[in-house]
Amino acid sequence: MDVHEAVRSRRAVRRFSNRQVPRETLERVVTSAAWTPSASNLQPWRAYVVTGSPLAELKRRAGERLASGEPWDEAEYQQYPPALKSPYRERRSAFGEQRYGALGIPREDVEARQRAASANWQCFGAPAALFCYIDRHMGPAQWSDVGMYLQSVMLLLRAEGLHSCPQMAWAKYHRSVSEVLSPPSELILFCGMSIGFEDAAETVTRTDRAPLDETVTFVDGR
Image (cartoon, rainbow, N blue to C red; front, side, top):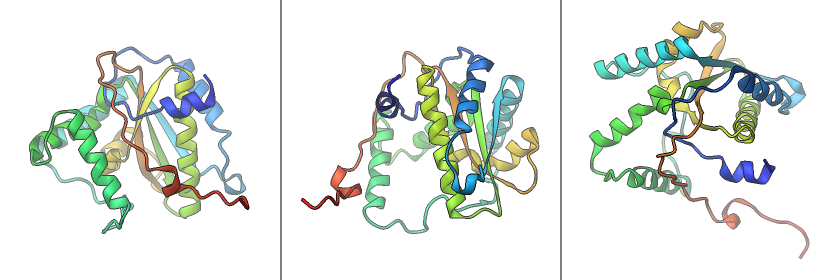
């Protein structure tokens, strides 16, 4: 698959088929993703690729916690600034409108929105997932390296005919994930990522992107 096609066709898929993803395919993806650049080659990511009964157990634990109304775990990092300023506030609001609008859920139907969001912790039906950690002593530059690693993974998955959905939502249940994966205590769970083949019945929706002149400035002397 052409790189441009991989970038343009990558999107957060939220409905996967139960078709299994071969172990060899997942190994091929993370082996290539290891070549992602990082400052001074620190390679600050630590990924856990989870399938089968361990993933089923994670889904079960998260589902039970959600059903019982148990509070989310104490946050180990701040996902968004306390008060988003413009234009980021408007972009986030527009995403919510497009995401839930595509599902036919109006803004005022909070319960329906919560039900839709709860599918995060079932990996949207995906048969594979990746959980990405970073050492809690790392700084902003290393967090950006982890972002580049995750993008590499997602584009390589597209090259294999697969889709994904990166999910910071899993950080809200980081204790449950730790109970199954047993990561070293110095690691923080940044996000999960659902991986699989898209369900053919999925309604394809793409959230808009800002106009190029809002995010890119060409400085070329013209």
